[in-house]
Image: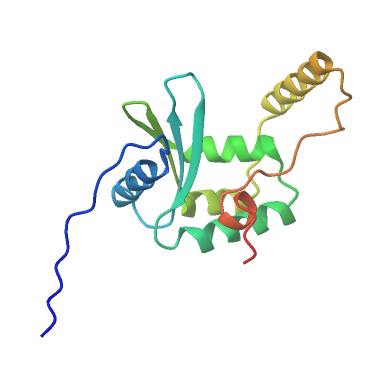
Length: 159
């Protein structure tokens, strides 16, 4: 008869934050309702940050649907900021910032034609013009496209 024994895994120090970040994201997902898009910012001690995207159950498909409709309707970055901000629920866990976007209300806004106010749109155009001037570039006309709420747009996944 063969007997197998296992020993506990050896924990070794590492500079790779990915396993810890993955575990934290899993815990954050458990705290949110289905069909939610999460924008999670891990603030680093050196002042930098790492952004992770995550979706609760039903979120990936609904997020992709929102993106398809938003792009088909010609929504842009200002609209993405405005609509996302209307429904964002922000919380913190130490140096971690969590922005939760329930996707059903976002979908309703996209379907009903909600757009960013003109002053917000003008402000973003001014920021882009200043950034272009500071870097010696010529800004493209208009605003960038809708940024995204689903994995196909945000992570380049083919769905």
